[in-house]
Image 1 (cartoon, helix red, strand yellow):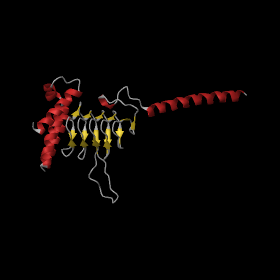
Image 2 (cartoon, one colour):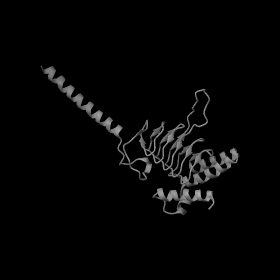
Image 3 (tube, one colour):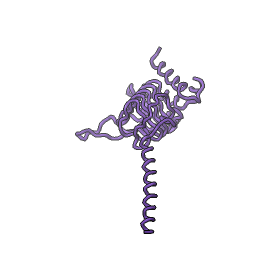
Image 4 (cartoon, rainbow, N blue to C red):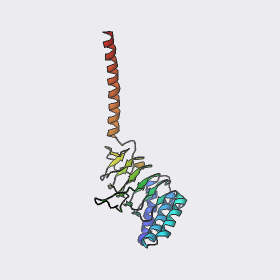
Length: 225
């Protein structure tokens, strides 16, 4: 089988496997804006590799107009890639994405300017995403950082540091939760995720409230005496 056709089928099957709202390949072909953007990306990336950069950028711009998803043709994306809902996704020029990765709407794989020890600007500006990663809606993954295999980025998380394999991170700055759920998880997190940092903050807030009550009671007793 032609490798390009095999990748096409793997992208298509990824939608059926991970999107419960899509019931057939025909429906995915006709109705999935994420799949449309991936097909146009693969075409623009092939043209980019032939050094026809302007035509590749024009195709990418057309895909952005059609789907609301912006993928630079120089980005490298593995097989079984899925963008669910799609609108607002941005994938930068030096981004690298492994196999079987899932992105939701409003995700940004953004670039930051990085200089080496001699003050020279480095070419690698965008994240490297491992295999089987899920990135929830609104998440921002910024800079030339690495997201490990089988990791999950919770919705609206802002990630600016490396994430190890098999790790779930949430919030801003993104931090690890104690969840060890290895099953597919929509938007990167669900009710099973236990955010220890958030629970610690809640407990500290409760302790402060109780301390204030005790101080108030002590002041009242002192004033009576």
